[in-house]
Image (cartoon, rainbow, N blue to C red):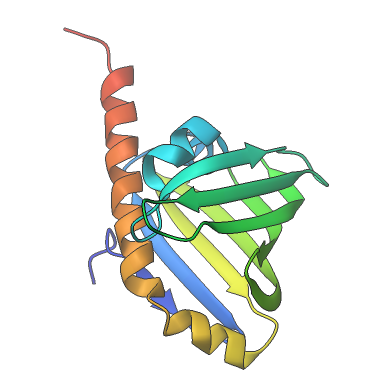
Length: 165
């Protein structure tokens, strides 16, 4: 197993766990997950770019994302932050604007070891049917592409912070 490859598991009948290791400190990964300018650099949907990215990063604060692309229908998601431990943990709700699947509970954990960060994102869906629909909708290739772009953004951030010789 290549730890820099996205791993997907289904530990329960309603949960999906995404795990990926990034060559960056967890504070940097946390920033890339929570700062709109950074999210817009890596979080895309097929044929769409993240256009609207509003984040009120506090417990009880909301977020709203909308992806847009030429000739494509806008896709939006929103939610509320339930728990935030900077550079360690984010717990939030997630609903999709045009998909009445119910609320998804998402927990994202960041664990750093020797300057590398393991991101583990657990999504608990309202039912097994909703979870299975997500699994069959292209979750693996879409998440793999997004996390590959995130790795590139983190690498460029690390390069920008290294002192010149």
